[in-house]
Image (tube, rainbow, N blue to C red):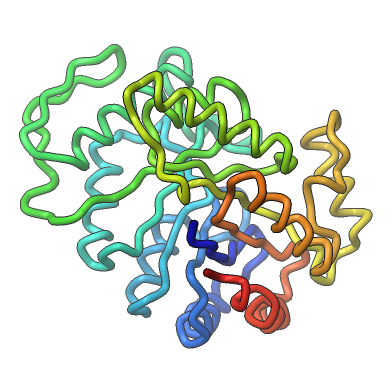
Length: 291
């Protein structure tokens, strides 16, 4: 497995600082930059962020961690991804989720019907349109005739998914190319990898061994107690110290445990902002660990 480390912008990055960050990551050889779907924040929209960062760079990969698919038309999403992939070949890493983490934002992604069913159908249509032209699709939620957005685009776009419940693991195994988890312990991650692989086998599919990753919060300048309290509110049944890195030493230990669990892709988000000093330490601490 190739171990890679990327940086997540989170909710606190001032858009005015994005140009310098992108240029710095490109020059330092950082693998990837990730944009979260955080509508009610100053965070840059993930598709806009990916496009902007890709346009300034030649090597930096760009991804979403995560963007919401249900509530968007899959054909239009496919057009966006293929357009961006044509401009930045092999550097576009979309990750999609079921719904917004902020409950107030969920009304912005309306669906008719059960959201999980809409997500499944959206993924089937998205994958079909990403793979070829003249797509006819008749489902419970989407009807498309002769969809043809590929139009000679070469290459492919892998579609990764988030989630940490059995239904999400089934969906990843059946319809995804990889998993980017969050707020799961190493033991839960190992169980998730095993379940996803079993679900993929049941669907006659295979997920590449190096297509499993996780987003981690790092208390780089933040109050570790406050950070663990925030994480604990998301998963009160789990010891929050197993979910977030309270410092760089803790981060290294967690990475070791997640690698042992079968993960190889890591998106690190500084909980306190302070991106310049964080990138300095990120380069020193994590780039030597890449394989």
